[in-house]
Amino acid sequence: MEIIATSGVLPEHRHEQAEITDAFARVISRGGLDEKVLRRLHGNAGVEHRNLVLPIEQYGELEDFGQANDLFLEHAVALGAEALATALKSAELTPSDVDLIACATVTGVAIPTLDARIAAVLGLRPDVRRVPLVGLGCVAGAAGVARLHDHLLGHPEHVAALVTVELCSLTVQRDDTSMPNLVASGLFGDGAAAVLARGGRGHGGPVEVLDSRSRLYPDSERTMGFDVSHQGLRIVLDAQVPAIVGRYLGEDVDGFLADHGLTRADVGWWVCHPGGPKVIDAVREALGLDEHDVALTRDSPAPDRQPLLGLGAARARRHAPHAPARARHLRRAARDGPGLLLRAGAPAGDGAAAMTGLVAFTVVVGLVALERLAELVVSKRNAAWSFARGGRETGQGHYRVMVLLHSGFLVAMLVEAYLRRPDVAPALAWSMLVLVVAAQGLRWWCIATLGRQWNTRVIVVPGLPGGALGALPADVPPQLRRRRRRGRRAAAGARVLGDGARLHRRERGAAGRADPHRGAGADRPPRLVRGGRRCVT
Image (tube, rainbow, N blue to C red):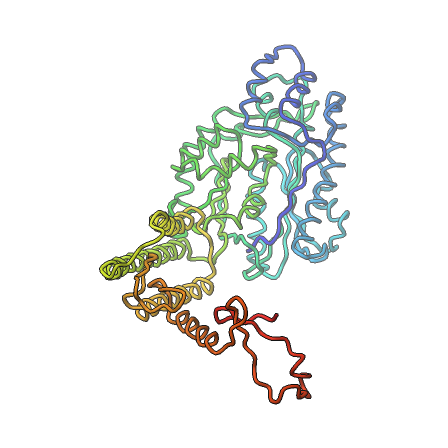
C-alpha cells in the first residue's frame, strides 16, 4: 500500500499559548485552582500557538455537553470534508474514486458517524465502504492507516481514505481543576487531517506501508481516555504514561522489526506522537535514540502544537521527501501500543542498499582525492624542471588557498552525503560516475600532452617559444599556441596603417568591378587586423 496524498486543516482562530492560558484561567472554577501551577504547566508544554474552532471568548458561554456536541458536529464535518477534498485534489482524484472511507474521532459523538456525513457533503459513491473508528485517541492515525492497509491488501485496486477530526477545545471542563485537566488544557488543539492510499505499488507515493502491529498493555484502561459526565467528556490522564513507555516500547519495537529481518539500526527516521516533553523523553530513552532522532517529533508541533490525535501518518508523508537516504524504513512509534512500519523513497530491501550507495560514493571521492595527490606529485616534479630553467612563479599567495578550497570541496561532498542521505536514482548515479571517469581521463590526456610544461601552478619560463608578445606560461595548451601562430601569420601579410594597425583586404578581382552576389567591391568595409583578430571598421 502506498500513501499518495495527505492534507491537514486548522480552524481559523489562532492564538498564542499565553493568550489561551489567560482565557482558560478566567473560565475555570476558582475553587482549588493554583494559577501559578496552571501557568507553569502551560509554559512547559512546548507549545507556541494553537488553533481553536470557536472565538476564544465563546468558550466561557458553553452551557452543557449537548451544546458542545452540536458545535462539534457542525465544525467536525466541515473540517473533515475540507481535509479530504484537499487530499483528493492533490492526488488528482475525484470523490467518486474513493472506495473506502475510515473516520476517527474521540472528542464528540456522531450518529450517523462522521464518515457518513462527510460522504454526503462531498458526494462519495453510494456504495462506498465506511469504517467509523471511535475511542482510539492518540493512536487513531496509526490504527486508521493500519485499517486502510488491511483493506487494500485484499483489494489492491481500491482507493482508501482516512479522515481524523479532533476538536479538543470543545471538551473544556470549567469545574475540573484536577492535574490531568490542567495538563491537557495546555497541550491539545483543534483540526482535521486526511490520508489517501492505493493498494499495491507504482503509484508514485513517497511512503509505502509495509506492516502494522497493535499491543494491549495490562491494567492500562485508566492510562488515558475520557469519562462521560453530565458536563461532557472529562479527561483521564495518568502520570505513569512515561513509565509504561519505558516498560514495553523497546521490546515491542524490537520484536516488530525482527519479524522483517530488521533492527533499530536499520531505521533511519522515527515519527513519534508528540504527547508532551516527558513522553518524548521516555520514547527516546526506551529506544536508545539520540536527540536528532526525535527532532521531528519535538520540532513539528512546536510552532503550532496541533497534536491532533492521529496525524502521525500525515506528518510522515509530508516530511518523506526530505528524509535522509537511510530512511528506507520509518517507524511510527505510538506510546499506546499500535505502530506502523513504513518505507520512504526507495523500494524494499533497503537500508542496506542505501549504505552500499554511501560506501560506493565514499570510495569514488577517495579515488578522486588520490588522483589529485598524484597531480600534485607531477606538478611538483614539473615545477622543479621549470625553476631549473629560470622559471618565475606568479600567484604564490593564493595557490595554497586554492588547494585548501579544493580539498574542502571534496570533504564537504562526503559531509553532505552522510548528513542529508539524498536518495539518488541509480540511473543518475551511474551516468554521473561515467562523466567523472571521462573527466579524469581527459585531465590525464592533457597532462601527458603538455609533458613538462603542465603544472597546477602559474610558472613562466623565459626563453620558451612564445612569439612577439613574449613567452607564454608553461601550462598553456598547444591549441592556444597554434592560435597565436595563426594570428601572427595573418598580421604579417597585412599592410601597415598609421599607428601600426594593419589593414587586411581580401582580393576580389579588378578594382571597381561589381560582385553580383555581394555588391561592389569598393563598397565593402575594410577589415582591421590587430594581433591576428579582425574587426570591421
